[in-house]
Image (cartoon, rainbow, N blue to C red; front, side, top):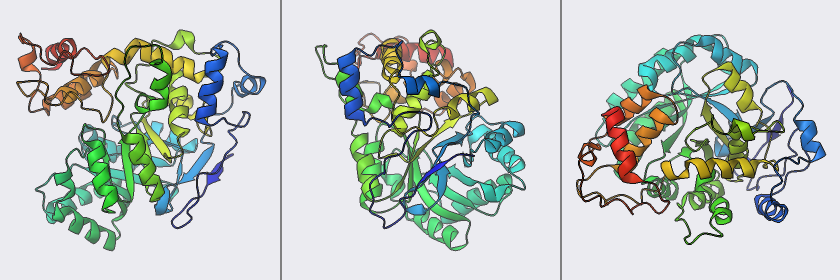
Length: 428
């Protein structure tokens, strides 16, 4: 298996070295990429000779491995997300046979079946992989309750430890201040049941939570929602001729700070809503929308790797086509722009939450729209219903709302009233 490693472990102080992408010419940095594509008008049908050669079919496999910050753990640049994994042992083994050695799961995924499936699939090959799991540790759980949750995950995973254990879906600093969580983490590390701790999140207060965790040196690894829809450089090109400049989240700043402290950074939600089927007509030269989105994320010097839900062998094959790249291809920006033009007005930006407080009835707008996205864009109604059921302030008041105070609350032009009503009718 051909791989290239980037080693930047604790204390190295090194910046990310340049890596020659497999099957391509030397990668352009993002600023130069934007300058050249703006000057050329993109020319979607014209691929450089080296990229045409790269389009020749090759065995899908992991082609780059990186060190996950100060943990020293070596992981592939694209990992296996198992939020919908439920019994497909062969899929896990197929991914592993193609070089995927980082598997992300959680106690609540498919009611524990995700962990159980991974446990069966990885039996006898445990030492080949890096395992990460999660628990939703709120502000009131005791150290004993948290240890019980961890030990349940270990039993389902058929192992005695996980390499990374995340506090899942953190969207409140108060959850990071629970002393019971930190006492649990210290004890679990001492007992060898976890090696490193982290937090995951993609909610409206994500930046605030990450700032607190980084500034107080509370975590080893972060798992965050991050995609081209949160990159100011991408929107700078799109909004150049418009009458407004879209408000951008501060996530790039936080990721840069994490990089400076050599924390492990893994990106999720990289497909910006995951509407894959409406761009097939524009995919050419061996590039797909998913691969373009992954290359954009992996081109960031502040991201170590990404995870993505792999639900079929064909998905594994497609997604691994982006492994090994550290810069976009020339056709990528055109695909991403088409996607944004078609879907940007219906999808929230992770970590934005500018609409918070806009509803007099207190509807959790961003959570509601995220549940709709799971059901419609992800084409996963079960996940959408599960997410919506967990929202205390759902969109039921939106059905007969007369004032529509939220109409102009989104700086990105998302039609909040229409989407909130649709979400409740679909999922309520």
